Length: 84
Image 1 (tube, rainbow, N blue to C red):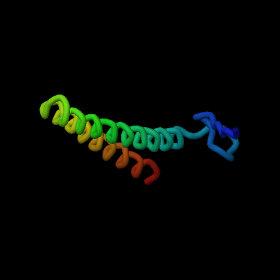
Image 2 (cartoon, rainbow, N blue to C red):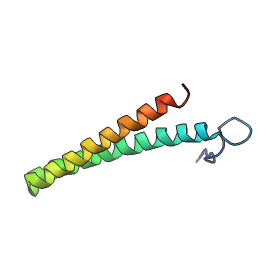
Image 3 (cartoon, rainbow, N blue to C red):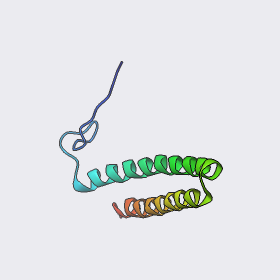
Image 4 (tube, rainbow, N blue to C red):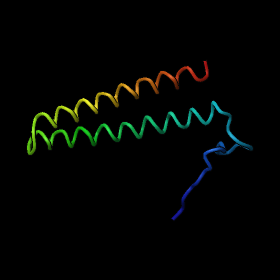
């Protein structure tokens, strides 16, 4: 199996370490994707909680999902401003 691995401080195909902006860009990209995965999970468990546990638990999980979406908006704004 072929597995490509890049060190977090090196830009693929480049020589030398990433700049702070480059690292932050990669981190923001990762955090956004990671949070999107969490949102899907929170909403799935919210649905299950609504069906099998309680509406209150379901609502709290939906609120957590929305908070994560809001956090991603901040990460996206930061990412847009990195190179402006």
